[in-house]
Length: 257
Image (cartoon, rainbow, N blue to C red):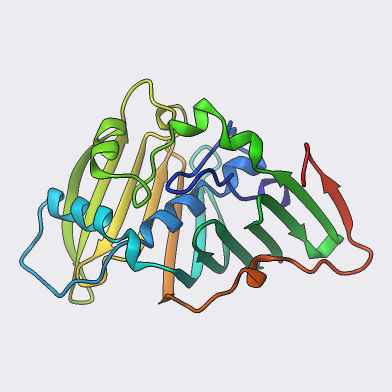
């Protein structure tokens, strides 16, 4: 799955910027990264009677100031319907405001993807190769501005971009779990790529969603499972700055600083 490594472009504060996500491209691989980062702004209120949709959305919008950083274990499962098969990766993710993100894949093979200092770096230790992409082109993109992500956009903006509903409320290990379904509205940028995004959030935690399920128009799904979450994890920017070993082939794309 080396050809599908990558991180989505990070735009101005409060927005994720994504450009042209064809299946198999490096841009496609980590839209889930954006969703993850967005969901880490949820607060941690005490247990309450079952909430309605508006309460859940209000919690998402209100919590941005509560988060400085996070780390978590992560499993990414891609279900490909036409081939009746799954591809599974596991590792860790970490995030630091305002614009640092890192994904370390440990299985089935190592790779490191980071966003730091205005660049995306995709590093494959197995072949000692790093590809570096600039972010400035995405920052000014009209297409990028149309991307609306839970946790980084207000409830009003979410409602403009999605039809939002509670798809169900269930219990897992004695905890109440809300399934919040986002259906991209026609003519939005998200509608070009996804049929639905479903966030499974646990009452009493709220940050992040325990599962994030993204479904495209061929019913293929990408599911992100997060465990061992540590909020405000005392991270520093240097955690996101790769020290590439001597002899690494570095491939730069576009103009970088």
